[in-house]
Image (cartoon, rainbow, N blue to C red; front, side, top):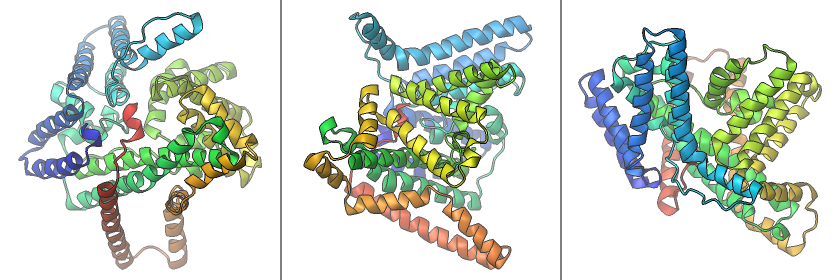
Amino acid sequence: MAFSSVPFLFAFFPVVFLLHCLMPSVRAKNWFLIAASLLFYAYGEPVYVFLMIACALLNYVIARLFAGRGENAKRMLLIAALIVNLGILGVFKYAGMLVETVNGLLGAALPVPQIRLPIGISFFTFQALSYMIDVYRGRVAAEKRFSKVLLYISFFPQLIAGPIIKYIDVAEQIDSRQVRLDRVVTGLRRFIVGMSKKVLISNTMGVAADYVFGLSGNELGIAAAWLGAVSYMMQIYFDFSGYSDMAIGLGRMFGFDFQENFHYPYAAVSMQDFWRRWHISLTSWFREYLYIPLGGNRKGKTRTWINRLIVFFFTGLWHGANWTFVLWGLYHGAFLILETNAPKMTQKMGIFRRIYVLLAVCIGFVIFRADSVGQAFVVLRAMFTGFGGGELAAASAAAVCNGLFVFTLVTAAICAMPVREWLLALWQRKDGPETERRAAFRRGVSCTLSVFLLLLCMMSLAGGTYNPFIYFRF
């Protein structure tokens, strides 16, 4: 698999970037990036690369067919395209879940289809849908050249785990962009930061989380349960935000500007604030293409509650074919409804509102991580009632708490907060606006730190096992 092959990744990125710089025109660069992106995906998914091309072609053709047609004809085309797109996603991603659910409810013994999930299908399907819907709404003109749509959907930095990009945001960049040294440097630094999040923090937290969630109920005391829950909370954040940083950094190196996907979500002061900071591109997608078309908050309080639950039902389901994801989504939807109807609740909590958010998010991620709803409740029960537990539970907690884990957990807790922004603000208040000399000094420190982090990542990858990103399976 290309996505878990470290030698391939370390060879692919620099070679593609250097060859891209040698292309004589933007159009030549675009064709080269299409070829490189298809090669990247085909290396890991040789068959499903044709599925991705077909998805891009389908939505390109439908968008072209909108031109010159009446509203009813356009609406029928839109409905047909939604059925086909979501039907393909449903067959590949949810057919097994549906059959298993029917078997469990009815006591049937229907054969469960064993269909291999194409990597990143949720991401490129949503990008294709956003393009086609925006053309239908008149927000963007139907693209005449299929190559532009194919590049938009297949561009390898964000192809398999986002962020989800809207065509309207990159259409001009596909036609006109520049590769400049300053952007290459900042992009490379961003890429290294993202890789460091994954390799140095997420992987270490993942070892602890996998260990705890693999324990049986009698091995799980309160200490181990909380260590596992917090570890996964850190693992998924640094895993996914790390990939987003890498994608944004690579995009900048190639001349593209992608939207931010995370903004210190664990510094949120409410659950609504959390969803303004967590997986921003997905939140934006569901708001624009599902919540607002359902009526948003314009049709009364009860309808608003229903709309939010629908959105978070599908937000959970988007993440995977398991009822734990749906339960996680509804759990977050319930919190947003609660906060909407009690807007002063978090304000009255003062300093404790950050603790409230962290606790609520941590509990939610236990549901998200568990293999089943039953396992989720086992871990949650241990977190709040697992006192005692004897030597077996104590040994489980001790097995997690080695020196590397403690150091990484403390580092993760610091890096998950906007410490850099706080320090810069404090610096400016103390010493006034940043001078060119101080800016140069800060850039020098940043570059030195980036080189140091890159060396640490290379040593870690050379001496250990590379774990694929969590969101590759979504």
